[in-house]
Image (cartoon, rainbow, N blue to C red; front, side):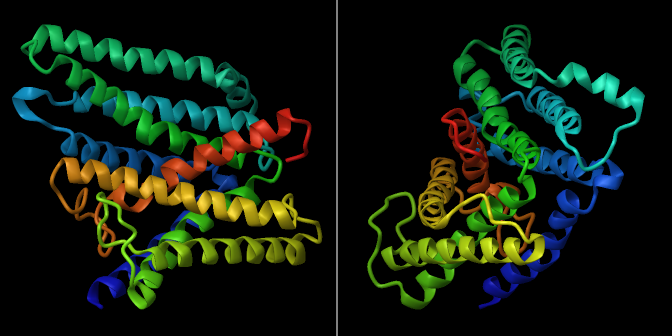
Length: 305
């Protein structure tokens, strides 16, 4: 009961800060969102690199991964400033961020840079044992955490960005909450997953049902507040809610697999009731980029997004 109360209190504190950072901070050029992301990257990468530290058998280059991760996130941020239409940028800033328009090319270069620097530090300062593990985990930390967070900016920059952010992020959180409380109230049959043996079928079903219901609530609120039809119709809303609730579960299980490999229960104890930053955002690291990819493919197929 105490854990549940702490879980709710933490969410009650963090949620308003999160909403302000992306919906009401345009007049601040979304700097609160930038700062929140930089903090998450700092805490999350430290947690990831701690989980993947194998000592003499290989350990990530934390400073390299952190600095490159911050640089990469800032690139996504400036690219977003160029694409967003909520606030007009000063001329000097609008002119300078044009460099970041071709963000995917820059991202590839930055990912190459983190791998290159990791190999250099390995050769100069560490024994050759564990070289592959050290370099690969350094790069993986950036790919696993920073690129999905960067895609939050890309999702927000879409024509109905606010709608998609509420839909995807809220769906992910509701899936987790529905599965958590559904499992505690109705859980009888184990899901049979070695990664999370305590999870139940009833919990997962409840999570998917609450996710679909939440999607319809978002559509309803969108309609009455904007006077416009939501981008998703009836069938797409149901399918999106179900599929992305499953993707959300996959994100949660992926982090559980890492924790089990590291033989620890939580990635950290930073957030009461949730554990570490990775425990809080693990599902979002899958749903956010997958949602953006889905919408891009949908637009390429000729459908409006």
